[in-house]
Length: 301
Image 1 (cartoon, helix red, strand yellow):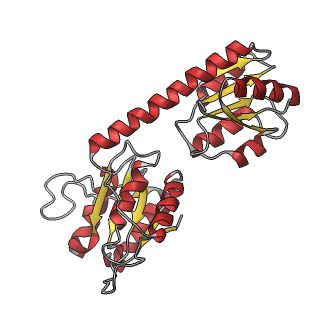
Image 2 (image 1 turned 180 degrees about the horizontal axis):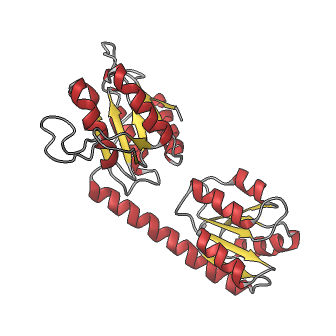
Image 3 (image 1 turned 45 degrees about the vertical axis):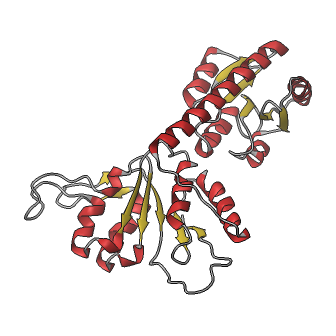
């Protein structure tokens, strides 16, 4: 199979013709009769390309495109319509469509656009994989238990979201390795992965370490400090031993999680941040046999 396509069109005849031609060309195709059905079928790991009609009842192709972009920024989307015009084409391309095809289109035109979009998808994945390997972020995970296998399956699904993640489990079960796995399989893989051991930093210094400070904010602050949140901009921030954060600092951490801003020490106004948070509570010691041990994942927001 050349690739997997989600084809969304409210025209039954158009769906059938496209389904026949695409399957004959060697593609796996799932069809949907409207935008809502298409979104319910869409899975970032399940498809290599989305083809959607522009004008449909209930939800337009542009709205479908916007919703898909929130789930997967890389998957190519082709927009097709019988109501083709310059304004529609410009709107589709500005929203992030890979290409725009007007109906009625020839079989060869459709297959050529699909082939080019698939090639772009393949190259995007290849470049990302090479960049991840070059960064050294991902670590090999060796396991034998079915519990750990389930954890990694959940990690794969969680990676495609932008939710905050809580990792729990006994010491030595690979929680930081799982955090790195989530990062490299997310849409933030090309951004930084920043790990902070909250227990290793004195409480009075942790605020500056996480949120940064302005020059002159306190004695010894001879220059601006960015802080770990802003160092992780566009990527993932892994907060290890988060239970060791002082109560006085937890309100600021909650604000950073909810409002996506950090209050820099000594600064006049908050600074916007765009980071994905993965946290691990204080480690639990383990004296048993190792059988069945694994990390656990909880999506917290």
